[in-house]
Length: 339
Length: 136
Image (cartoon, rainbow over all chains, first blue to last red; front, side, top):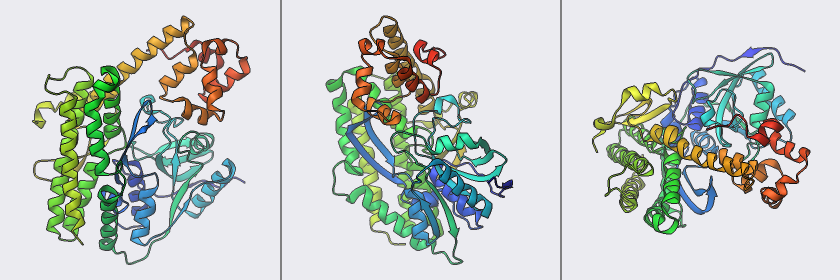
């Protein structure tokens, strides 16, 4: 049974990162204000892991963000909002029907999709990457209205295309995952939510007892960068370096591997809750993020063989170590703060 | 490093791949803007990275014509898939895929098997075999 045409009055805003952008937009739809950095910070989006024994696109795997759907799930949990996440469906038809039912009720719904078959994306971006998020907010005939935070305007997708991207195959397959907000309480404690999110992030960055996660992983990577040219030869070393740069500055990061967004979160909550220590940490985070940018800039020159003689892999390794120490300082500082 | 030194606005505007990016300025303020305040990414991503990839693809294409490689390897390089990810994507065993990647085995494959690979990548059989429309 086809449902009648419905378009929800949903405000599309561009954002730096797809999932925190979708979370903040969904939240704002219910009339409360939650900026994108706040959603990212309370949802513990920041992360680092370096897994050299797993290969992604033929180069060591690393990640600058948390697992997909963590941001939405945790921020809603800490804010005390009643939200639903359906992790997977059994078949295509069922998942699309569930989406239609939601739209009929007037609920904008977030979905996880694969990028490869998204028709409105430029061809350069269309790779087998399955962790993209967007919000569906309307249906007209056979077409769905889609708000994708990467694009400037809302887009339109047909039923078949949407079903295909929601059931993209490969690693981290979305399997029709969708999420939405049911009900928002009248009183929301932003202070405790930000506190909880911050301390969870501190745990994940400096206290996990495993040597490849968080700041420890960054130190291991710094040591590895120095070894690459000797171990693998110049061509492969520059390919590996290119992977770091692409992961740090690839689309949907908001710049410098999410460090700018996190700094914005610290700054905003410092101002909101009158905490000077947090403002100091925000400034330090910004400086570290700028060092990330310098790292990617020099790294890019290195990949192109245009680097100056002193800008070799040893120097990049030292720089990475310096960044790791900078972030360690920030998270140590945050560990002592209670807001 | 001097930030203004590398700031090149015209080049950013010429490139249509613009996304919102956060920045941190000297006064310690964060803001969301479109495009980069300087250019590691689009120098690397849009020009240099694709140049390196295209050179590699050209080499493989030549190897396919010489009978030393297969179109399967070409498309896997093109879409950055390793055998494990691609076999998961296709729903077949990784050993079977690796076997099909050998030129001698590939030459003996029946059309309907190759059609499966072409369907997975959403191109026609002819396009798959000739690697048509994917020139550097």
